[in-house]
Structure formats: structure tokens, C-alpha cells
Length: 134
Image 1 (cartoon, rainbow, N blue to C red):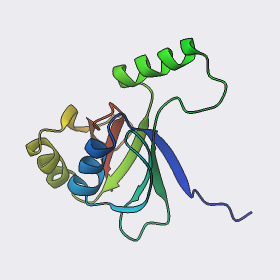
Image 2: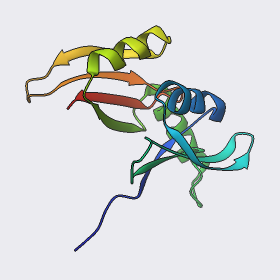
Image 3: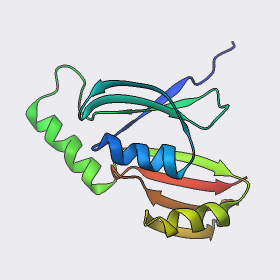
Image 4: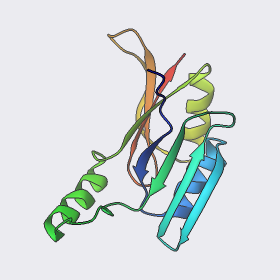
């Protein structure tokens, strides 16, 4: 079978702050930006990547109860709802740039027992962004 990942979704709570993080700070391109206000679906990706990330309003699935919407909002606030793992050949350079920008550092570059070296930030919506050294 020839199946590839086209896109994955992460919630945003402030589309402009998310654009500042993914487009301006990480240097990703915006491929699609639809909707208005906080009801925007923004597709971003590293330049040249076949895979993209859709930054979307949280709790938009049909049929969610108010309790479920509240649970999703609480998980976003706690940083336990969205997660993405990225890679770079220059972990220290990326870490220094993100830290200097004031991005929320969760973990400084660390040698992990499973053999990788990585760091973790939170994006403006609280999603964990783990970046490992290629």
C-alpha cells in the first residue's frame, strides 16, 4: 500500500499567536487560511514538506456536549490535548532561537534514555512541541 500522512491537526486558541509561532518563529509557510476571527483553519508546513499541520479551533466536532467541550478546554490549558514531534539537524540553534523569543520552555535539550536528544516547548495554545536532533 502507498499511504502517506497528508495532514495532522492541532488546536489553536488564538490564530494570530499560532501564526506568529509556526510561520514567523519556525519559518513555516502558510498553505491555506480559511474562516475568520477565532474560527479559522490554518494549514502550515515546513517549506517543501509533503505533510502539513492544520491549526484548528478546538472542540469543533459535531455532537460534543458542553461537558466534553469543557474537558477539551481544560486539557488544552493543561498542555495535554495536542502534541507534535519535530526534528532538526541543529537542536541547540533551534532551542536558542525559541527560548530567546520567549516561547514557553518545558524541557531544555536533554539526552534521553531511548537514544535521542530533544527539547520541548509549548506553542501559544499549549500544545507540546517536542523537537529532536536528527
